[in-house]
Image 1 (cartoon, rainbow, N blue to C red):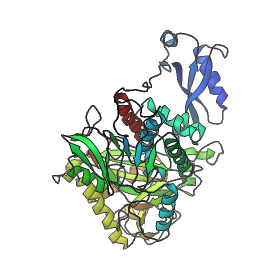
Image 2 (image 1 turned 135 degrees about the horizontal axis):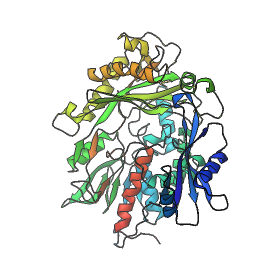
Image 3 (image 1 turned 90 degrees about the vertical axis):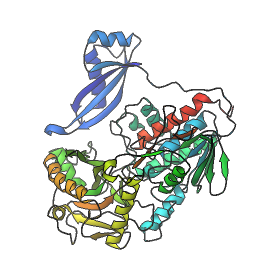
Image 4 (image 1 turned 30 degrees about the vertical axis):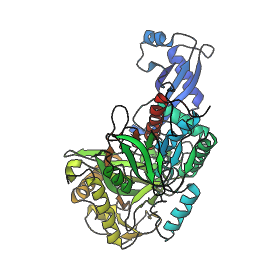
Length: 529
């Protein structure tokens, strides 16, 4: 429990201690009366003035709630400790709980279970990170695609090959638990207070390895190269999860398979697990020179050593549809993110330093299930595949279609790059970057780019690059679950994370994984100790 003093605005180069002093001044408390620490800090570059915006937590030996009410200041509020207590059930587990998938949701579900004595068994269809790196590097160098071990599948999930962004809008108290856990396993310590924390692919991989080691050290077991092929049920209740080699008896399993496990979706649907279509988005990646973005957003302060590489978030709505930026990667690269043969899929990533020449982000257009009413839950999956295969046919290879923004707006193919050089690792073919996308998506992108250019100078510059397609922004299906978190049609199976349609990014997926673990812990006693 504490006081939170928010919206403290200071020059971006002011020392952090000045924010603590300002929080004390605003509340009339002294350093002898209260302990002060920065809770959140962000950069605000709007309106031509760059400042840091702080929230400061004050801990004092007083009735903090009554004190905040007495002050009646909108920027000072009482913040109770809202983290849920760690549950502990009493029933006996006959079998180890199983966690399927070792992406953010599965990793945190397994870590939480392991730390509290539940000795989970983790099944991951891909390899460990060493094997993933080897498979991804080989593919990017022109080798064969491994459908089970790639940017989508393997230790760490799709999040391990990203910018490691830890932003979310869910506002759940468990977000702080996730951030502290990541920091305790090697992530930068400042992620616990940054409003837009990021880890970077290079550091995040080591964090994932450390957490997996902690799972194993606490009695958990991780089986790599072990894909889920289905479930066995009796009277609508989970009895076992199936792999190619055996059926593993269990009463409870956390299903954290990610948004790209299409074959697993189909197998579970055949087994009676209930799926429903959900909105998702498709689009392209846009690349700018990072220096141009810095200049547009920071003006004369561009390049200042105390300012991070500039980042943005843009959106536009028209005719009931949205076009927006997603997964913005400052100083990063566009990456090949296929998980099926003869397809082209783009994504973005950056390292912790964000020191690359280009910035990139997805420009995505919303798709509603009503756009795809084919009588099944998997119309979105079918559209994703159609786009990805059409892009492969367009280039005749795993190279991605690429186009300058000026040419895209003029509806003509590109022949070459301009000032912005493509970063896509398997190479590009210049032409029409969005040709594989539905016509209404292309129109929305074409109408939105000038709008975004009015918000950020140079966003629609002629030499900015589009590389396509981006199809894996989120899962196009939801694995429906009830208030008890069990999947409809299979009691005991707990769908969670992005693949189940209950998260949108690393942080929210990790929180959902913890909640899935807590569901088991609330009912059953630990297996160990």
